[in-house]
Length: 220
Image (cartoon, helix red, strand yellow):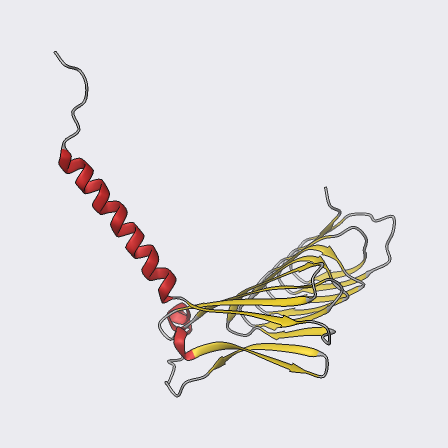
């Protein structure tokens, strides 16, 4: 008796059809996204200021570069009615999400993701100042900054890196800092505070949250 499993041709056809469907679906998803990529010379820029209202995720990393690379991704039913606008003014690069069409957008907070779901990522030179405010967004940072000023209502704040001074305020989100050196002033109305001891406590971190936990630790 032949114990070898006989694979019928229709099995191959089904598998090929399934793989084709997945490929087409992924292609449609990629094409459906509203993606903006832009590169800007950073020679005259000292500060990056982001009004991140309606942007649910903001990430910024620093490197030894002289360029500012911006990438935004918009999803949702009205994604093509919005765009991230970039304006350079007086050594400051300003970014915000703007409704560019005349289409009336329903004010339905329960289905906000169907309207537009926006993410924003920047790669910037080291030692620039960064200001971010957001109603729904979380902020993830990595690298070396000059100064930080962050105001968040719903989202969390997370950083692996260093700065000369930082002021971080959240309402609901946690604050998590991984840094080599810090003199910390921290206050949370309803959250827990955990802070490592630092031998070199030069940079001043002012951290405040209403409901979130605050953690400041040294790198492993």
